[in-house]
Image (cartoon, rainbow, N blue to C red; front, top):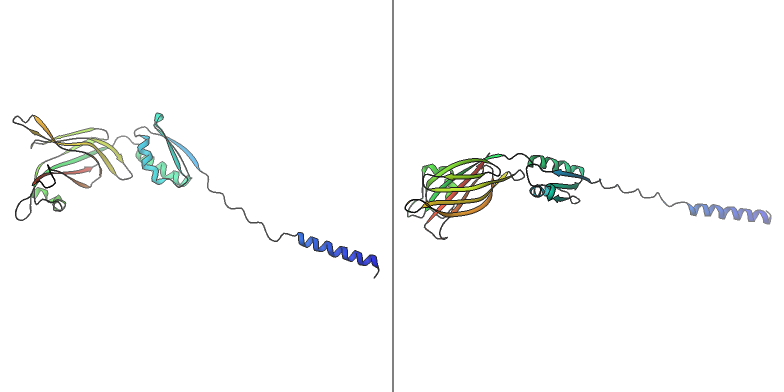
Length: 235
């Protein structure tokens, strides 16, 4: 083997080693999947207020979702994933409807503390269990009535016993299946001529449809007498 041939073999060996060193050690990592795109929709309300709708759909939004209220247009701009947007569209469709009709049943119950066994009038048997949880043991119905109206309508009930219930139907919330009863005021006509109206209770509350609520009104927490106001909202 002559000197030139040796040099040629060395050169070829180095070239092969260089080619081997230049080869990639492995396949490049696959690109991670892109996050689903966000969509944007604008909703203009015909019957209800956009801020109330915003409160109703807030629990439906994802962590990336957002919304903005446009009061001048009574509109709501929502940004979120397509799946979440489907739930938003359904909720808004249920929410923005013509004012719905409801009935409010109001019963005034006189409550007292007496000696002996509990005394509950027969016409109060339907709420006897709830009344038994209160710190009185004698109950009698002193008036009841039902008034029907639509969202936004005022309601007024005058009972033969002299009690009066005034209020406004608020908005229906489909998320909680409840109707707002605003500015509820229970009063009684007093005075020799029954021409003076004495206010006994003022409040606003949300009533779940079909559920019975009992409010109490007394001069002091330890009073021997009180009034219980039984309320039930129905469609």
